[in-house]
Length: 476
Image (cartoon, rainbow, N blue to C red):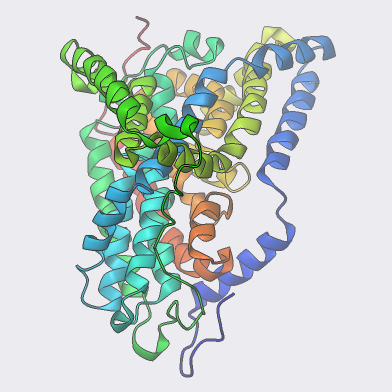
């Protein structure tokens, strides 16, 4: 916990509200699994109230539970590979060089925000871990007198502001890979390639604007001078030295410590990558989630060089996937119940909610209505891919009825879904663990980001939607 603020420092209104909210959330918010389980119960009850029989609902629970296992494992690997790459020795050397760039504490906070957001375009796990380690490296430069809390909040901005507009976007990856989609959802919307989601010029423009705003807010809100609370003030150890591999103790460990297998496996993967990226466009290649994960996995392998070091990094990364592994099957069941458990008039729960969205929206207002809804729901279901599986059936159905660009509908979700991450402690956990902080230490800064992001994001969702024309679903 942070020490009392230095003399003369007074918390702003937003920070006081945010600190109060986080204190309440830490006391009363249950684990995110409970939210997923409660959502399942509510959806099952709503489907039966809509006229679906109990056995029909139970059947769809079982059908849907294992329906997205490939996607579940794919998203677990996004987290694992990001951690493995960010914690490698070459990444540590890069962090050391980057930490020498800033010349002031406030500049260091803005710099962390910039690096975190740029890294989030490649991989959200990479953004969290790399940003956290950069904060620790900068905190070791005592002459900067960098506010440790503000820097930690800046390191979180990749996940809290932009990650879903990048290559590891759960929703965009899901729709670009038909084998990852639940069958009922694929029948509705078909395939939506990256060229229709994160590679739209409108999406890129939104990312650039959010990058500028986020970095500016991080810089402007960072305390300076005597008001800055450093890692040393908080008595937090920021030593980045990692334990070297212990010497091998038996002959059977030779291959674990030798780079021989690394060289052979990387050679095999390079041959595959050359074929993959020369036989199709790079956009098509990288939009395959299996391709994306394998590239990052092999990168982590070569950066750690020795199999034992690589395996140690993977072991440390696996705990970050717990929420994904246990919650995503439940979201698969929710999706199946919503789409396939038919009730009165042959309409599913998804049909009824879609009709409601159509009734309260127009083609022009739908992005704003949907954005607000997704942001609010994200406070209670902090899972980009899992929550989209819950929302997608009725949201995409409404978009088709209102003739809203389907790829932009995915991006509306992407931008809006990231907003609640700024104050929800769930995705902060890896960063907080690395930096030895509590959510209450940083949420005052991230809450300020949320307040200023919200109107800008909603405006962009509406404005850019006006520049896009509807295209019917594509089925390869």
